[in-house]
Structures are given as structure tokens and as C-alpha cells.
Length: 210
Image 1 (cartoon, rainbow, N blue to C red):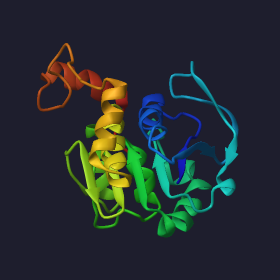
Image 2 (image 1 turned 90 degrees about the horizontal axis):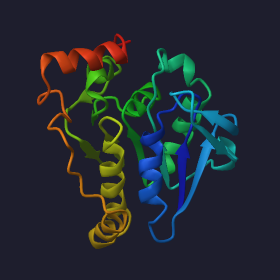
Image 3 (image 1 turned 180 degrees about the vertical axis):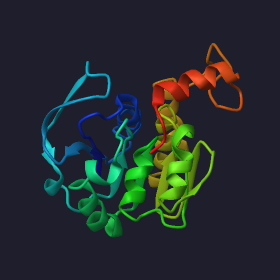
Image 4 (image 1 turned 120 degrees about the vertical axis):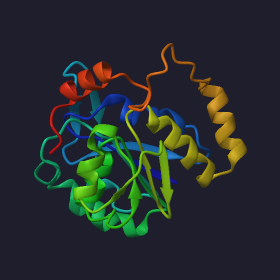
């Protein structure tokens, strides 16, 4: 089972590393990082570099695609090379997935037209303008498409995906092996729980929606 974990300059590290840690443990999985330009790709912080060894062309028909998010102002222009690959590969996948603003890339490829999907809460309106039906659910599964909300939701999305690819008990074993048992120090993981001050800080950091 070939799994293509898409990486591009400015990707958000946890968006792709969370799913990698889960999906690389799925029995029979052959997970690879792929990019339009393989080599050393720098994450959005500018301080983490991931070495990518495969070109998109090396995996024309993966069984699973995972697209992470990142602070990219113009999705259509930034992913000019990735979008045609997605459009060609998607009809043959078992599942095409995204984390955070990675769903904007799927939308730009026309894969989310009229489809329920999620992303980081600050970009839900952008997702709507791109033809998707935005929802604030943490993981959205519609047919062969799964989308995860912001950053850490990639782990939840990947565990859901692992259960679909194998069996729920396999996904549960992976979760236990990773000791994924969230007990956050603050009840602040969604905009509904946050104060106006905290929401404002996040929105200022994320910048205006495109």
C-alpha cells in the first residue's frame, strides 16, 4: 500500500509528521515523502528541514495521499505543479486526505466541490469560497476524502484513516503504541472555548484570510 505524504516549502511540520507517525505503522504501508522538487525542504518556521527523496512523478498512483497545510497566501499559484498531479492521482486512490489548510489545496484541485470538509478554523470561510462546504468537525470523512482540522487534528485524521485501511483494532493498537491520550493543560483547543483575547492573538498571527 503506497502512501504519498506531500511536502512543499513552507509546510507545517506537525501537519505531515503526525500522520506519518500513524500511517507508517499501518501493516503493509509503504509511506514516502514526495514533492515537486525533492531535496531539503524547509518548514514554515524556517528552522526545521525535511529531506525528501521522491518526486511526485515517482508515485503517479498512490493508494493514499496526505496533503499538509502551511501559511501559503496564494494556493492556486503556489501549487501550480502539485494540483495537476492531485487531479491525475485522485481518481485512483483509496483515500485522498488533508490536514489543516491542506484542504485548500484539495479545493484548488477541484476535489472538494460541494463536499463537506474542514481546515484550520481561521480559514473555513476561504474553504467555502473555493467550493467546499466547510464544517468545524475535527475530522470529516466523505467517501474517499478525509480532511482534518488544524495541525494536531492530523493525528486524529490519520487514526481514522488507519481504521478504514485496516480495522479499528489495528488503529487502536497504533494509538496505544503512540500513547496518544491527549490531556491538554488548557481547555483552549477550539475557537468556541477561547476568549476574545486569545482568538485575536491567533488571528493576528495567522494573518487575513485570502
